[in-house]
Length: 389
Image (tube, rainbow, N blue to C red; front, side, top):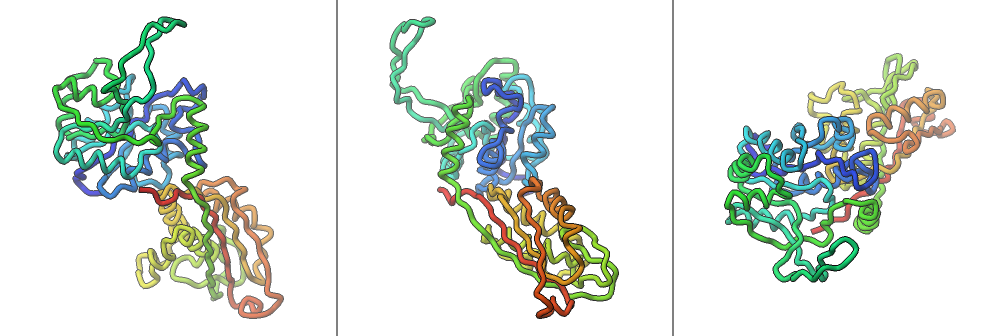
């Protein structure tokens, strides 16, 4: 993140979302193997013109927030207020020390903000102080009186407001401070109350807000159509040297030899790391942690696996399954298999059932058969967003 980012995205996620009828706030509900909030945040992390992202959360939601944003490069979250307007103001005030020129304010319950939509708002901000994306109202509007229709509302000139709404930072911060205590429904209304001219750009029909259980179901269907499944393969080999234990999947296993390598030589985690990177099309372990760099001498290989997981998270990818095969005559893997599965699942924040560890021998053939080292082969299956405009 830049020391003084010119553009910051502020994701407002302090609401309770009671209309969904769940104990968990709607922004933390599962969506496409991730959460509503993670999808919303990912859109802004991916955009090249957004330098930093901060989320405004309910003070009691920190555990849910930490779980939902694991591995994401975000500013520290800040607590929100009683009303959404309070939360937006508190979020803006927390950004004042960073001195951004522009801010995008987005509702966490809108997980489908496209790159094109964000770009339209930012482009309009080059010439205007406030920008709102919106869609023209196409349905006939009726006024009701209880159960009775009381009249028809002229829809000409009416739009449905969306987020992200974009603002020059100093002006929207001043507007929010001046409007504190009022019951305004969005940030554009706060800008209007301060006399700022709000410009309109085209919204996005996919950028719907999740309010009801039906909305969440529709979002699942929409997301399924926008995601693809990929597999990646990893392979690694380390030779034996003098020692008394080997490290496999982060578990120390007593043995009459050790594995040699620049790091801790965890051949299993190295193969898993390359498998995830392969599914992402993101190079290999040596691209990020070259053995020529003394910084990585002796380092725990979970660092490599966590880095691959962070790259996956930044792409909005979900790790569906990992399948690891260790090839060696010794040590025996069976007694340690469950511990190894637990450790990998713990490192990646997965359910243990998503991690498979197997072992085989080469019937005395080759370097593994001669007990000269261990080989590992891994397959990673990921679900991730298709490239979208």
